[in-house]
Image (cartoon, rainbow, N blue to C red):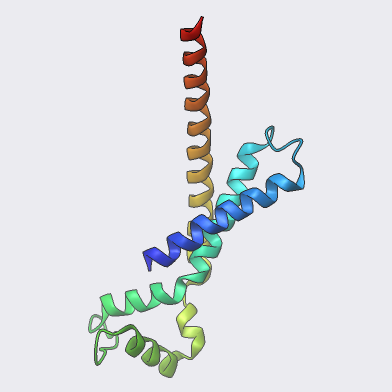
Length: 135
């Protein structure tokens, strides 16, 4: 679940950031935190929604046999998916996708904004330090 989430997350962030900066390139540097926050939120939401079926499978495997949860014939992803679809239909694989998106979108927006602001701060600090040493 983590590898596909991360792949979608990073790819979406970079594509959204590039797209948002192309909309208004002259003001992109003035609104970087808005661009990073929006791109981060989009990345978190899309990655969360896209990997929800894998999260449902993982949760079902972790909870099997506890508190009335189903037991599976094997620990295979295919077996768990078949059982979920048989019991709840394909909608069962998307159980909890909205709360997951509402968790990951703001978390990713905050994380990317903080990361990009810190990166800019340290780049400026490094540039200023290097220019002081040259003179």
